[in-house]
Length: 288
Image (cartoon, rainbow, N blue to C red; front, side, top):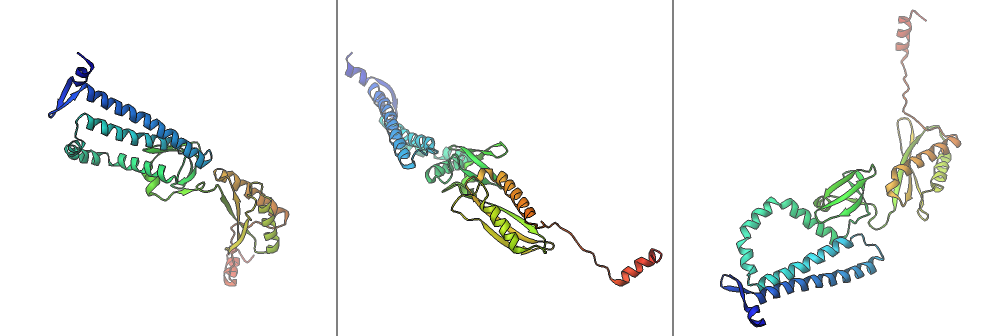
């Protein structure tokens, strides 16, 4: 038996289409070629992304896996056609099953598609700091179905990708890490407003975490029941440490107002009694 006879040897018959050693070897070769092409595409994508992002490879792994799946899907389809399997017929025969499976796995499919959207749009990347349901978290891993995040209290949460796509998400590091630390303080009505403004402005300008080139904002926001209310805003580049920075800013404001002789107001109420009420109370007290 020569090589030609071996290649023509029939292994199986699929609806009148013989599967020979030659066609099987060709299909295997196509899959192997697809694997090689995938590796080449991944190397090219890696070089392109590294050059474009200047070393920022936060989404590199996901993009490379996505390109691998795409190349291997094409290679697998060509290999099946080589074996004589009609993909159109196969898809038509499995349409009903696919619909039922789609209903059963609609959440998984939705999350997978959302993961692809996140990889393409790159609006959320590993390392980003986002606000999710009012909680500040850092993105650790961006997967095809779900995303792993970690809160400032070291709590790890697995978030479905669809939630990141359909919900309104605050990304504090999308284009830059600038973040405004904002606090409020109320002073007594007897305070010298010029001294208050001067003390607050000096504190905000000398705040160690303030980003140079972004002036702080001092606003008189309103007249409360027992205080004149001010708002102090300082720009920083560390949104993850917002709680610590807010505490430090509040402490600095406290001491600055103390040194300026300004009284920080607190809720209080004055009770005024009519003369008739005072006289009645004296009568009850025996005229004292």
